Image (cartoon, rainbow over all chains, first blue to last red):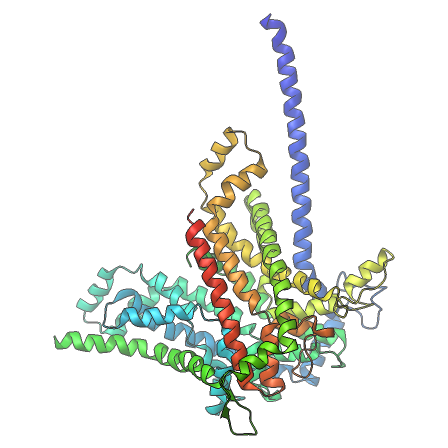
Length: 297
Length: 297
């Protein structure tokens, strides 16, 4: 009996496995299809922006919907136009300085404070730490207007310090660095002290080199948020000589700005280049930095 | 003893730059903002105490009602939709391995790298009537041109699409980090019990990543409640004109900024900020309470 059953059973199980393999492969095809479609939706708007800049001028969109670039010289021409006929280069300089100074300030001040909070006990520590942590819960919406009024009182409207300084006390950066610096062994700090290093030297020669990864991640995240900051420059640097890239993009973008789409997209593309380059170089740090803030915070 | 005192001084010296900036540009503005909110206050006239008048003026204004209503609809769509998309993308990426997992993760993440002001300006042109990309595509299928950003029936949804485009990759990366921490043998056990892929997601994956989901939802809510850049740049983009047709894209932070910088009513704007903060703190508190009750994975 068993001998007659076996081939049939093998056959049916074989056909079942073929069927299941086929259904798996349909699921796999679907999976790939969805993944590719989503990838196109995610990347295409950026690709399209690039194409608008690098395409023959004057060809109507109905004939050339800008699905691919058609003219290198037209694009270069657009870039030249925007640099020579608008104040974009100046805005670029302001944005670069604003971002650079903010990164330096945040890294320096929050690493100094994080070093103390993470490694030492001193009177008032818990109170200070508690106040800073509560501030993580306070939304930007409530501080932005009084901070602006304070900046005006200080006479910092339309200045670089007005852009940079009010943003330097970053509770987020402090929190991130504290988490990291807690893992520095106390023995290393004690050893440095026995070698005769003073407090600042320990911070500078022991804690900073050991926190390199966290500092790089914080620098990149600060770069992205500062380069992309639109609302603060909009109110604190309203004079055209202090416009940031974001403001110029916003002005071109406004209705009745009489700017053609290729010029608008050139401004957009040039504003997108630094973050895109950063992403290509530091992708791992960016992704891990964001993932960490979500899983540890 | 004296070396201990000098060491304590060293601690405070290291903390002082951060704490000073924090006190001046964070704590002081909160206090002064509360003070301003009780005063009729503008550039031309001297300020005078008005009690709760600023609060009642904001609360009973038509723009406040419109902005709050818009916010309610916006938040209740964009947060669940955004997280559903992010979760789907995370599961999708997780189902690939090696090169393709990295490839699709990077592709889905690229919009996050774009500053919000760029995302908004790029999409503004994609939505443009007649010659915009989306209307060109609709035209291929013989459909009439839609005024996505000027038709009160579509404006909010057009904005939510931009929002999801930007935020999905951000949340995906955080959820992916959570997925990595789910022990593999949970899935094997579920599979042995005959659970389908869908059942595994519902009964194994989701409960295991609850803390991450709480973070993503809370963070998403807090940012959505303060939405500014995208609706600002999808509409008039200036203090003279914002909110779009029939104020269909007017949101509280925009309304607050408009009262401050458009009509120079900083007292009302400060009051607005505090009302918004109360809302946000309440929402955050509810989320934390829910997390405490259901969040332990």
